[in-house]
Length: 294
Image 1 (cartoon, rainbow, N blue to C red):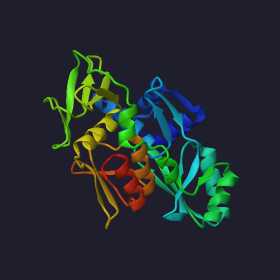
Image 2: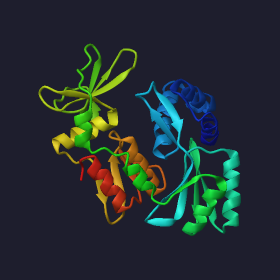
Image 3: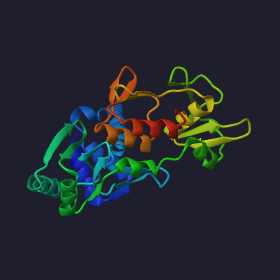
């Protein structure tokens, strides 16, 4: 799939519906990606990865709408002389960045990513990066991690605010096994329970006490269950700056975005694990603590 064309189209609109997004992915998909279940998987994978790399926000609670993120040159204090381009873009903006980088004596690197927009990295001194942003009329964030951190809600606060709800009757139920780190149809108490209707609608619940069950997004429900049970499911290697995430327990979206922006790439999948590396210790610590894993 042509990820650049998809982001150009979404940036031109600014925002839209899930139906429009799905249709666009279908039209841009390669022939082999259009077959049955492959297409549905491509749509879901593209949705999450566009969010993870900081280009598009999706709002399932607002009638499943999406909105392109404001363009930004995102830097981190750990590497002030480097910025990754996040958010909406157009061919004109890409050309402007190339021209401004050349004038500012900065290097610009474009990295191809399968089924995703190209990654654009700009390197130079911080003042030059700021000048490039001004000339291209985009923001330059010197601490993009701090911006993302403000969107984090500690798991205990999240649970206190979550709406009460009852499990759906007559729907298929899947339970997240915190030991095997995968979903199962075998009933398990005090863990995330996903209810699936006959039409494919999904809702995820978590019993937080004997008398209270709350409704949560799927990813958040898994980590809330792990926090309540005191089960560590993430690992971070300080020597290699590697953050390892179970493939069936993907990070909630703000955390996944911080991991991607901090490491400069989407996670690598291997042996049922998603590996983000190198993730600076500050970013890793904030992810772990916010998810009750620290």
